[in-house]
Length: 233
Image (cartoon, rainbow, N blue to C red):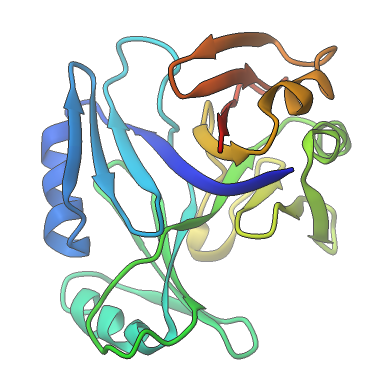
């Protein structure tokens, strides 16, 4: 069984200035620094990892992703970010999301997906969605459902599919422009909680293009070049 997203890695030619962007606009503190990576805390046990393009796995390029906020903090985020960005907003039937772009061209979404926190301060509660660009949608759907995701919905023209673990969603997009002209990420790297990383990886063993044990868990690469680290609870 799969669970929450522990990290999303984004490629940044120079991580420090992009980290300053996230600290300034999203109050995301730096929690770790390494030779090629800066990690920031975005709440809910999730990190955004800004990674130099000088090794593998690389961080994702032009990745559309979403972070949750408590429902009573959404207006505070709008008021703060509207001063600096040309925000776009979408109402998903009682739950709203705002969209803007970071300096590396990633489409950042903040959605009112959490229970009220009793505060009107702009706070975040983790990454709840990441979009992967894939070459062939049915093939990618098969891979991720076998890995442990469940299909939630599909686009009318079948250019996209949303799958979920419960606390974390991925959207599989064939190449196209989505909401706010967002694109699916290429060579995305995410960490996802797994109750049994070995069993999950075995379920797609014939289709992974790479598999290795790493410090944080068991890392696999899907047929489209996206990396997932299955993080043992």
